[in-house]
Image (cartoon, rainbow, N blue to C red; front, side, top):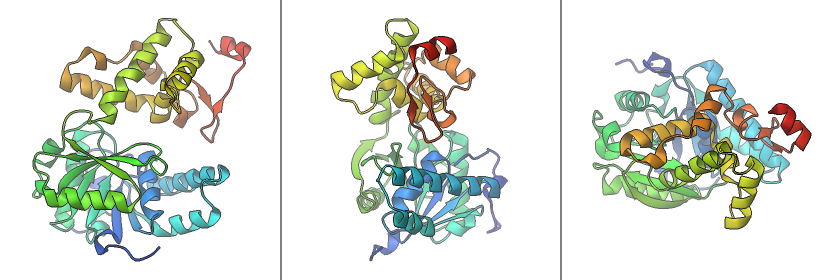
Length: 321
């Protein structure tokens, strides 16, 4: 196969300092969407070089611009400095050629939650990359064992479920498929710690820990709103003050992206058949109306261009319906 293989050749569309371990010197990230940007920032922020692959030049440019904007927001909040931004961006290089990952020992994909797309990416990478490289999927719901079935190195396929915003959330779930080797797990655990994350080990099961646990709460909050029991403001206030949550469940859903929440719930409902994962009709309606949350400025709440919630008056809420 040609070593000039590009992501756009695949059948499915793609979204997406100091001395260090040689295996972690350069890490590949496939997909420069919101999650891919966060992963690239978190990795590059610890002094590791990142090669980020996107489908085409337009999306690669948009991904790099999104990464710069995300860091600018952190600078506004005193979370980073302009020097940090310069250092991070200097370590991230975007490309459209997956063959440029040939020398990477660690690859992280952060594309749409599509089984076929992720499977194709695994096969595409191992056609040009190192046989013993570790391929990490950022899937929230899909089976790592099934993804690895057609790979020539199923022992090197593992899950690493980051939570958004990646740079500031200290947790990462390391998900072992049935064929993931102990050596692979140990390497990925060391990598997680190298980039400042606390890893928890998860044995493959739909939804893992965080997704499986949080979705029923988000879904129930939507039912409470749909049934007219309380307003979105009061639901989130009750959960924040009553249970010490930083964000209420509805704002959390907005932050994740309502289309993502719906996709995850449909996958778990299909896999597990449990009624608690049946998506709330209100969620389906909002996704149909393209009210997807913070990324479009409108979800259960409204947001400005920086993703900050806009507090509305009672009159504005009534006029908006």
